[in-house]
Structures are given as C-alpha cells and as structure tokens.
Image 1 (cartoon, rainbow, N blue to C red):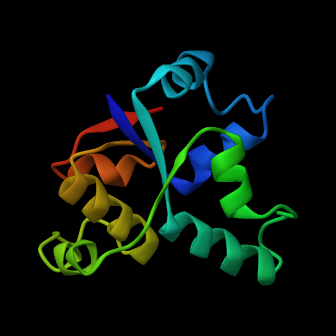
Image 2 (image 1 turned 135 degrees about the horizontal axis):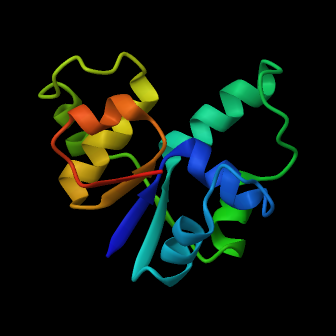
Length: 125
C-alpha cells in the first residue's frame, strides 16, 4: 500500500510519543511500500509556523527524507483535479491532498472526518 500523510499525521509522526497517532497506524506507515508527504503539507506547516499557530523549528524537506518518506510535488494535474471535487471540505490544503491522493492513487492517512466524504482511499484514525 502506498500512503499519503495528511499534515497533522506527519506532525504526529515526528512527535514520536504523540498518542493521537495510534501504534497500529504508526506501524502501518513504517511498513508501507511507500509513504509520501506532500509539498502541500510543507506549505501548510510554513504558513502556520510563521503565523505562530504552530511550533515547528525543523526543515520539512529534511524531516521527510530523514524519516524515509518520499516528497510529493504539486502538479498542474493535482490542481486541476481540485475543480472536480465536491465542496465537502473548505480547507484548500485538504482539498489538494485529496486531489493528489486521487490522481496518484494513494491512500490518504488522516484523522479528518470530512475527508471520508470524498471517494478516495483513506485510513481514518
């Protein structure tokens, strides 16, 4: 299975003792064929960190590689796929992650209940 981590899941992964990421999900991520972290998450982290909404002192790209994940760039196809999504979710970061999961045929790992309304493969924690 190839996974795409929602931003909060990536952050919980980095916080090794975070209880919001169940051990079974942590194990699934660790043993997946491939686990991707999107440039969308890097942008979301940067915006929230610069506005003081998130404490993040690392470099996202370094953390992606250090943890054995694969960076996923945003393509024109990903952006165009957002237009075909119903309006279940208003957050542009999450909508773009859903579009990436659909276009790339990845399973999105998330705790966001609203994402379940989309027709993409998800692992909801």
